[in-house]
Every structure is written in C-alpha cells, then in structure tokens.
Image (tube, rainbow, N blue to C red; front, side):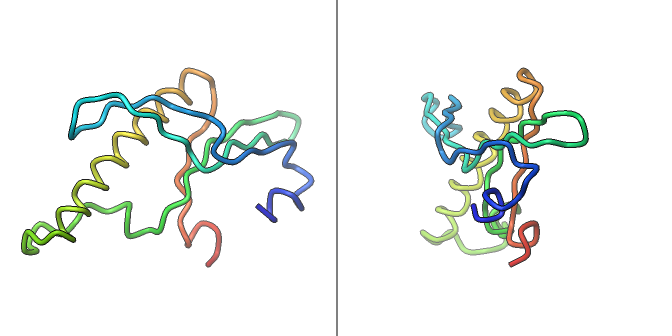
Length: 111
C-alpha cells in the first residue's frame, strides 16, 4: 500500500472494494470474491486498471498428491480449488472490462 501511495504513476487504488461473483467447485453455490487491490495507473500516455490478489507463492501450486489425506491436506485441496475458481472468475471480469488480473506473491513484491 505504501508503494501505491508513493508511486506517482498510481492514479488511484482501493482495497477489497470490488466484488466478483464466482461459483464454488465444492458446494456449487455462488459466492463473492473481493480481490486485494484495484489499481488505476499511468503507463506511458495510457491509463491501465489492474486487479491484484496477493498470496504466498505456495498457494499457487496444487497440493502434493502423494501426501496422506490429513485435515491439513484436505484444507489445502479445498483452498486451491476455491482460489482457482475465484481467479478464473476474476480473469473473465477483467477481460470483459479491458483490465488486467495479476496474482502477486512475496517474489513479486520483493519480500
């Protein structure tokens, strides 16, 4: 957030204010997903809008199938599936609006 505030190319930003409906792969119901950031920025002479989700990089990979079916493993499977459904819905919305969707990790932001 400090980066957004200090960067002169960031025209405006908001946090978790934009809802995207998505269908859960587990219960088949529609839920709402609130991405972490909606950022409008200046790129050259153009204004771009980017929808950003921030997650640890370990959440971008599917859980290891060779693990025992513990509660922890089942939770990871569920979260991975839920995140994939959210991100696919975000990509569709962004494509429709002419925005970009990014998932930032600790590697993206330099931690």
